[in-house]
Each structure stands twice: as C-alpha cells, then as structure tokens.
Image 1 (cartoon, helix red, strand yellow):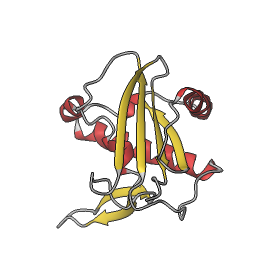
Image 2 (cartoon, one colour):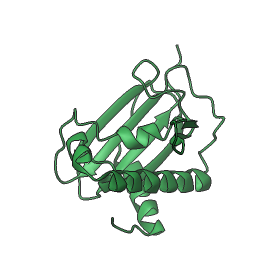
Image 3 (cartoon, rainbow, N blue to C red):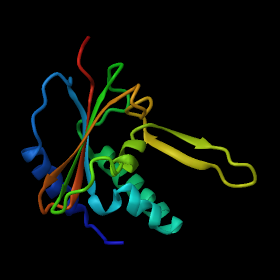
Image 4 (cartoon, rainbow, N blue to C red):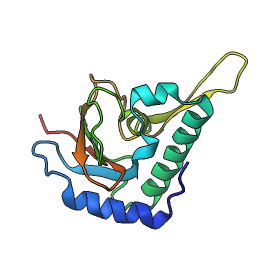
Length: 165
C-alpha cells in the first residue's frame, strides 16, 4: 500500500474544494475530507482482495479521516445535521469506474457512529467512526457519488446538513 505524506492530503483537499461543484438545497457544509482513491476500491476489485488488504485499507481510512477531523476547523461531532443529510463523494481519477460499483462504501461507512459488533468467540468487529450521520442507508441520507476525470487520485467526501423542510 502506498504511503501518503500529510501534505498530500492538504494539497488535495484545497484543490478539491476549488473544483468541486457547488450544490443547491443541500444545507450547510458540516465537514469535508479527502482520501486516496486507492483505498476506495470498486466492489468487484474489493471482492478479489485478500481480507488482510481490505482490513488494512479500512484502518488506513479510519486513521486518515480521524486525523482530518481533528485538524478541521469545520468538524463538530455535535453539529446540527438535518433529518436527511446529503453526503457527496467525488472520485477524481483518470479512469472511469462503474457508477454502480459501490466504490464509496468505505468512507461513507466511517461517517456513522462508532460501535462494536459482537462476534461469538472472536474480537468484536469495529464499525463506524465519526458519528456525523445516524445511518448510511438510503432511507437516512441522500448519497451522491460521482466520478470526475482528473489525475488527483483521490476521493473527496462532503457532508451537508440537508435542506430545510
């Protein structure tokens, strides 16, 4: 797995903020972050990976998103997120991915509250992290995932409070 220095994230975040589309009726921006596209594989690639590699990807994402939340001036774990927040994921890579390939799964999963799922006879499985959204199902969030042609090689994740009803 590739090493990414901290400056890589800062540069990509500033660039993504500059080029990401402006959205209407999504509420206020609650938080944004950037993660390497390599750590957000499409479902067909993710299924063919060794479980250790998948675990390492998730741990790397968990670490990077936590670090960005700690240094972000925007991040507030108790921020008012509406009943139906809007989550946008933009994949900036040179190669198109299938829009139905579920490449946005890992970063969106980490936006849910931290919990440990008990497994009989084993260590509990960790799930979630930041607690910005209550649940990542389509009933609870408006998820918008898009691919954009670019050589940035990253995924830009934004969480908005949701439009006022």
